[in-house]
Length: 317
Image 1 (cartoon, rainbow, N blue to C red):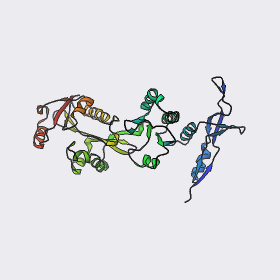
Image 2 (cartoon, one colour):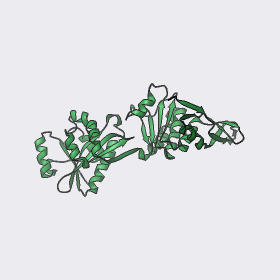
Image 3 (cartoon, helix red, strand yellow):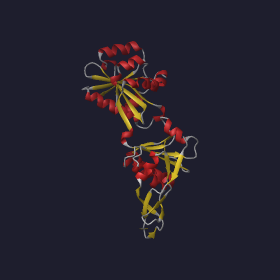
Image 4 (cartoon, helix red, strand yellow):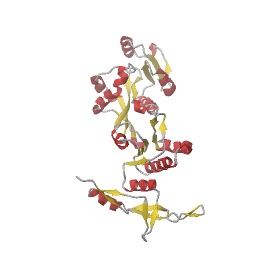
């Protein structure tokens, strides 16, 4: 079918008035959005084209902030996503990767780094933050000059833009049978590098109740398992975060989740065995190095048979 659009006058505005002693004249503020008008167009397959102009009850036209219009329209339509495209400015980054910020993190980011951002980017980040506070699940800021930026952002798990998300956007939940394939795919490279113990699909499926996953926008980007052992001892295993989401705090959240889950199970001690991540587990998870004597008998037997010579870490709960 043909793609159809219509220019609308769905933004009702009023004068901004006098601010700081200066008459803003024909600059206005959004008063409300004609939601029903926009919904009628959408129901009929017509895409509304909304300019940063608003009209008042007497037909006077005012210039309104385009980011503010986008925010108000997203709220009015109860949109799941609000996407901004920039024409200039550097996107907020987390190291070399586009930043993914919760509402609280975005608030702190603006307090600390607003002076480092261009006016355009700062405005979009502020309005994206407000959108998430008002019910929009997530707001994206993309480089409008980058090829395929919109497609990459929407159809890849890592994305290419800066994102602000409401709390419900990310979720740690217990894994289900349907997640086995995704878990196997997620940890494959780490198993090949001998960072994680090799597990078969059948083994993961049989113990799926021990696993939890970290989801972003329905994509599994992290996992952890808590295996109950003998004598009120549990083992945290299969802690992994996808490469595109490292250094974003997900690993620590998964460790804390695993610790709380072990406590809920009535465990008194949490173990972790690692050949390569022991420094991370000690510095970020509060584990201390132990000896083979802390392993329950059955786990000690399997440890000795494995030949991996993993470091044994423990944490009292």
